[in-house]
Amino acid sequence: TWGGRAARAHVSAGRIVASSVEQSYIMVKPDGVQRGLVGEIISRFEKKGFVLKGLKLFQCPKDLAEEHYKDLKEKSFFPGLIEYITSGPVVCMAWEGDGVVASARKLIGATNPLQAEPGTIRGDLAVQTGRNVVHGSDSPDNGKREIDDKLITPFLSVALWFKEGELCEWESVLTPWVVE
Ligand code: ADP
Image (cartoon, rainbow, N blue to C red):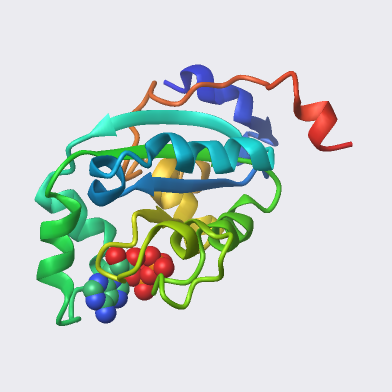
């Protein structure tokens, strides 16, 4: 069933067409949770003007961490990365807005926090690549894969981090003050 997600899709000539609204999967990693940076990180996306559509504290199982980072499987740091991501709870978020994927990458900063610009989350709050406090989707398609794959493949849900019913369909009263 489509439930609340129906609002984000419409039927055109018998086919379900995904809405063009972009979403980014943003995750506070275990170090960010342990260091008490959850509020600070959420605040940066709120203040920017993006809209929060999903949020949960979650203990990531090993198989999900491996699937999420499957493109890095051959890297020497992969086992350490899986251990890190599963070492404690993470905060999973779905943020929505025009251009949110690229913008969130800028707000987050470079993978290596020592190279991240001041003013970015990693630039301000972290020092090491292996403890870089936050994840952000690297493309709109990966945003869908990480949050809500039904937007790509309506009848085959393989979204990684959110289940049916975990996203809220709502409009922020601030939106007209953020986008004309
Ligand atoms: P990003 O998170 O900026 O998109 P990547 O996709 O390249 O960066 O890597 C995913 C995550 O893997 C990084 O955020 C970091 O947690 C980890 N990682 C990447 N490179 C290294 C490394 N050389 N040593 C340890 N961890 C790494």
